[in-house]
Image (cartoon, rainbow, N blue to C red; front, side):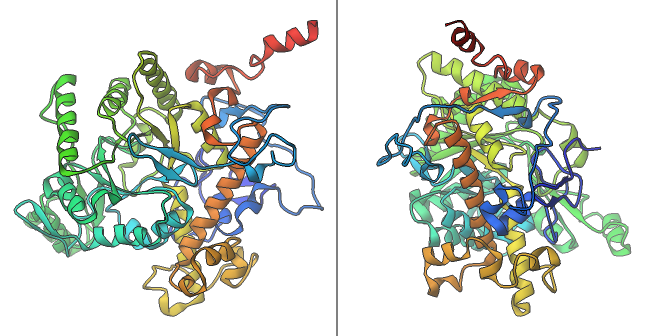
Length: 546
């Protein structure tokens, strides 16, 4: 049984399934008719920051107990005076220091700084079919909002139309579509990041991208993710496609070339076959060997012309965590994404997802500790992004504070995908001719949507803002899923502005670990963040005694 609330009467939200710490259901469906907080926020935007039915209600917090160690058991500190890290043009007057004037802009990187309008990024959206189906919504929404989006592993390898000859890509239509869609609406904020695993390296993804796109793309090396301890996976329901993937060099289970498997497939007792990626560094047996391999890979990528390179690691133990921070820093990478257990997946073995690895808050707390040890030696620490079960504005703030000053972004997977599904479902219901093309799942709008409105202009709080940004003529080419992504981003940004204003930090660079405290002693012990009544207690006693 989940310890997290399934309903929130104040916001009028309901989870269809069992909720996670992030507030999302354990199983998030593309055809869902609502109505969790993220789902509703993708339409109503910043209105979801407040209790419903203003003027007819009063509301009280239901968060009365702090059990265990989690991001929800960190609390945000507030201050009664001061104004720090003011953006250009803003003074410390009461008229200027209002939350809409808080800047949520951040940047990451070494020699080249990548600017972002919001301190968030997507998780890796790779070869899972749901990523391909809704990519236009995800990528256009990210580009318009100004945050980075990641093309995950194996996109070329699973593409039937891709041409690979002698270990080099000649054609990669799906990868091209994903990059080109983002770049069409890219305006200097955010980034398109393409991830590589063992198979992608063999297929020459790095060489293909640099030749076609140059420094427009950030390349990401992959060590792992929080959802699973083995490589990327998908399921296919075609025996011929499974054979195709085996011929492409993938691990395919069960083996589609075996007669007994083909017979079981024909009989219907086997209905799908899984494609797996390989583990990295299997021929390396020491830390030094891994470091040599990793540094060599970075040197090679630099020689190809890559100016921006990132690394994604998973919820391994402390040894791998320290290696990732140390090596990424020494290699002068632009970003290190640290993904803790408890996040989401397109496909992972469920038992593995439930039981493997280090939960996000523990992993992130140690990441700060190791980064500080490196900084105390006078070394430059790589910019970091924290990932794993984070979805709401308060969690974004807490993650940035827990890892400050090294954490520049919060990486979110499922939360930034939900608006893509929702917008496609709404668009398909409003225009049945487009339903199949955009992967809409609804024949008509459900009551959870019609309670808000019946046209895109009524349904999406940010429809007019997007139209103003792109122009009326271009608006016809903007999928409603992208409008929903933009609307959710607006809500997250506004919520973050409010929290930052309350802590008197008017830009993300000012966020520090002093802006949070622990809600229980166990969280204090594990994170190093002091217990709430201990914070400022010495100053308080001086005030009383003065």
